[in-house]
Image (cartoon, rainbow, N blue to C red; front, side, top):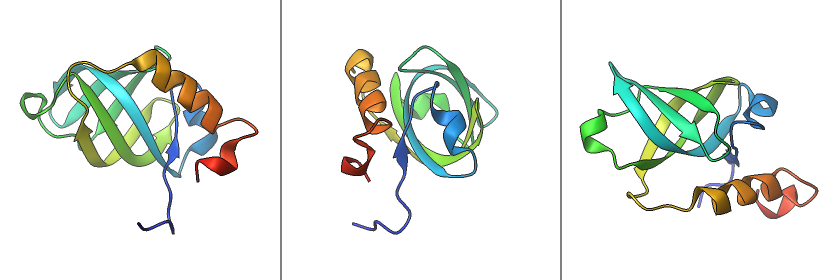
Length: 107
């Protein structure tokens, strides 16, 4: 496992802390047009994902690893299907824990 450039686990609320850094975020796919995916984060924020694969190849829930360009956009490096049944509430709690005083446990 390469730990030289870890991706911080984020949701829509905390992504703004990591602009310009590598992040990982699970989104529920809302729509995809022309290489840009619109998704809803585990805490309900809308974000755009640039350089995403076509929606036909994606499941309802997708993990995006890439660089946070702004509080509402990620430039994707890796997109991984997480299926059509994923517990976003639990994932949101994980995001909150990973960005709290326990952050060192996740990087």
